[in-house]
Structure formats: C-alpha cells, structure tokens
Length: 299
Image 1 (cartoon, helix red, strand yellow):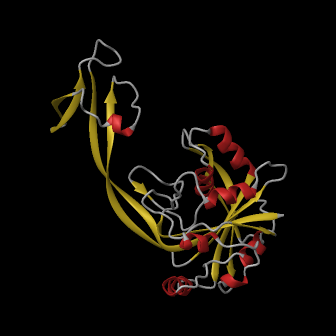
Image 2: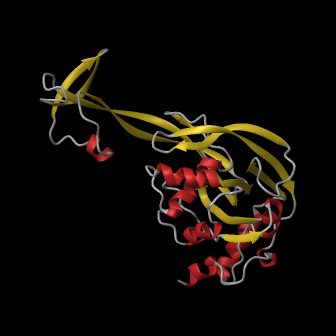
Image 3: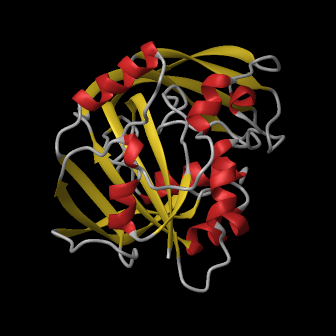
C-alpha cells in the first residue's frame, strides 16, 4: 500500500463549492476531489478537452486532504463582462467574443435604458443582421487566507495509474499549478513524496511545514509553524486505505464527470478532526535523496 503526498500552500486560495453561482462564489476551507484532480491533470498536461485520459486518472485515484492553519474566509468583489449574442456563429475564444472590428455600433433603448449593440450586416441567417451586446456586472467571491493543505493520493485496486509518474509530474508540471484561481499561485513547491502506508501513516510521516536551513527561509518556516494548531481537519474519499474512523459523512457534488461541460457527480466525503502536534520536517521517514524544495532554492 503506497500513498502519494504533496503540499499546497499559498497566501490565498479558493476552494469552490457546489453552491457557486454567477454572482456569488463561496469557498470551502479545504480542497475537494475536483480541485485535487484538476491539479493532477494540470501537472500531467491533460487538457480539459481530453476526456478519456482525464476520466482514466479520476477513475484510478482516491483523494484525501489534511487542512491546517487559520484559513480565514475573506470576501471581495470583481467586475466581469459577458457577451449576449444573436444570429452569430459560436465564438472561438473570449478575445473573439469581444472583438468589434467587423461590427458597427448601433444605439438601442430597452426599458428606458440605452445601450450599444455591435451589429454585423449578415449573421448566420443572412436574411437578418447579427449582433452582440456586452454586459458588465459585479461578482462577489470568497477566498481562504493563510491555509496550508497536505494532499494524499492512493490508487484504486486494479488501476493502472502510477503514483511515481504523478510525483514526477508534480515536480515539473506541464501546466501552471494554482490554488483555485489563476491569480493564486503556490507559495511553496509541491514537494511530492511516495511513502509506504495508508492515510494515517502519511499524515504522521509527511511534514506540514518544510524545514529550511538558511536564515530567512528558516524564519519563514517558523512563522508557518506558529500559525498551526494541534487540530488537523481531514477529508477523504470513501475507501481510502488506512483512513481513520469517520466522525461525519457528507454528500458533496465535486466529482468531475466532464470538464468540457463542467459537470460534477455526487460522492460521499468522509471527515474527521485529528488532534496532534504539528510534525517536524526532520522526522519524516521518506525516500532518500534531496527534496525538491532544497533543489528549488539551489536553482
């Protein structure tokens, strides 16, 4: 029984929920199965339209996450633009949707309000003009401050997914990894390790905070440890080997079935809280060799 462990740390993160809508986008305080599998797909270079490879990886993996730190939830607002179109072919990209080079502005009035319609003489139906209109709205988004997550992966029985291949991809990801949104990058390298044992052994062995030798980074490591309490919020897929007894089970809709159509299935998520001191990095009994964190700072 082997478990792949890696770390996700950043000043800000967004852990989407099934309640996410167009205007209000809340966040959970730990990453769900969909977010974890998204990181793995990005590291392996699997695009959203590559449904076959994505489903193979998802079907072969069990996921778990140990969440620590204050994880304060903050709220912000952002303005976004959408495009309303009529009698126009599908847009190839967002840039194409907002391109007005071949359109003429026409002033219209609806419900006492004036707006501009960008109009083309001929649309998909040549008997009618095509047009598009831009809408601007305010969205409210939550994000998590000051959290650190350890993520664990196990292979399902009879699966051909290789944990060592995923670990290698996390060290040199094909696509950029981020914590929920593109403007929320990782603050530390993932530092993947494959260990012998189940979930509880992995939680005990793999350190929450890496250990640094140099002065500035050593102080950074101490600062991270001071933010940790003795409680570890653990969430995992049903059937994860070596998991503790669940304190509660929730049905969550975060199991990706299609990235193209953005559809998610329902799964049972097991949860428990473990009270223990934060482990020291030096006590980790993992495979020998230089850590990617050490190599990262040398490079």
